Image (cartoon, rainbow, N blue to C red; front, side):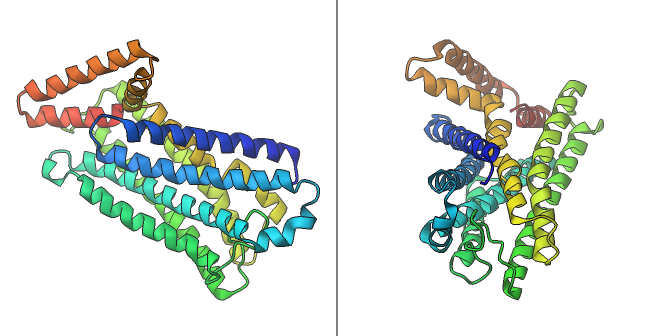
Length: 331
């Protein structure tokens, strides 16, 4: 890392990413409630972000082991299996996380856009097929540098594919970065479409102004964290790939610690911890061990009431759509 403040920060971010995403996976996988498409996608997102935490832990551990004497270990580390494994973890995690975020955004957009057409609702098998493609893509992108077919993980101590000497390496780096930028722009377009649809006064079941405000704020936070994570990394990486480097490798470590893992730390809070359904699952799980029994009972009662309303209410399309839109953006 080279600087004490970076050493401290990387451990803080590493612990947040590993603990936060481990809790999300534990709660979601042990929940007694039905496995829905959003819950299924959330599991994949948490796993991807957990892998990013593992990468940071590997880098931070090696940094402590080689502190002040890295020159004695540099060649062995960067040429060894450890650096390849760390590089594979971070590229795989980054691409799978971005892919999953894109699928989550598209699923939300599709749910609202086609709310009246319940037969077009995304099913679990569709989500599984999409994520199978995402895993294959992330594995391929992460495996190419490990096999030396494009770029390389051994050029820098933080094991990122920064080798752009060959044309194939340049093409690899630029294409991956452009795909990530395109995913971000696609997410922005979907969130804008979602907000426009929900905010439309002529919609079948428009949300209240207070709900609109909360929705807009949450979308702004989601897009802002994505932007903070992707924009600086993509900008400086593309400039370096085109052989117009604007920062040194030493300075790139600051980007690695401060910007690169932002999503891995923020996603558990934005997509899980702050949602009502996750709190319900968490308290129900904790109640099995004798903790938070009162809160768990409250959430169980609320779920029973909501299920009763859905079962006993008349089969009104308008009521169904209002419930769908309201539940999607409340939770």
